Length: 407
Image 1 (cartoon, rainbow, N blue to C red):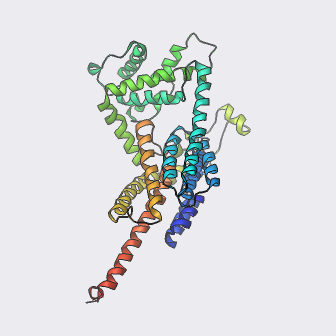
Image 2 (cartoon, rainbow, N blue to C red):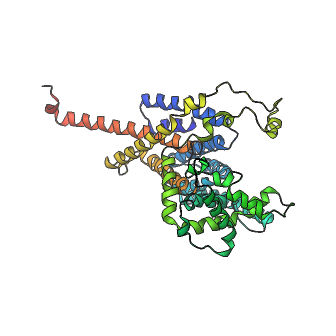
């Protein structure tokens, strides 16, 4: 609500659109299902909306108080999710174009960069103390290897290129797995493209290699074992991607682009993944009397959420066409209030798309923020285009009234 009310306050969309967007925000079932999932997704969505709201205020009404709150919000966002790193680049651009003094611009950019930099340094030092190697996120290494595997699977054994000795055991393990799971009817998970099965599922090569590597190590925690393999998996993933760029583009980048365009519902589709029980630690955490759980909605998730991938794809097309119309109508050249807001929305959409497509895996819960943002911005751009069309028609009517005389 803070986001849409800020848009209403600064950019004055039509009353009809205000009612539509207010309804979209208040009765959107996506928020309810995300809020009912034990995950950081809903919290990150809220923080992201607060972040973009502060940026709009910095563009229009900058102040020292906004610099302070922006620093706090972007810091929290970065501690929750790694892809908030793109938020820092966008924020720096916003501070550069904001109407305030150079010292304040430097303060805004510097404070956010310093806080995030200190967090990265602290986290890296903690992992160095745990594993002996400085790294910010072992998760990034596992993700890189996972992404590479979705391309590597389709490389025929006859086209397999040698890898450095340090990757030999891991590579052999992965190729052996691929050769034994060619029958997709028997192994249906192998039909899925550009997902995260390889980095989380037991029995997959990355997990198996972790078990083999620490077979004689009974003292290390699971976190330490997981973190120790982060650098190796990252280097291996980059090695595979560099050796087979065509396969990576065809079998990971392109399928992930399609997923970004129409993000799958994934875990949100079914309550508790279709199970009527939870593990004991969940029972203890929530204070349940038994491990059995009851859901009264049953298939309500499927009924309400099945339209979201279609809606997301439609919104993406409308947004792109609206941005094109805005450019054709010379909206970026005009001195209008909405211009900077449109640039901000476009930058967030493009950078988030690039990060998700190349380095992550698209799903509705991950794409909730760009989906909400795209829907609202597309609506406002369509509203602005309609206003421009009516204004030009009125001007033409005044200049050439004879053309509008009924036959």
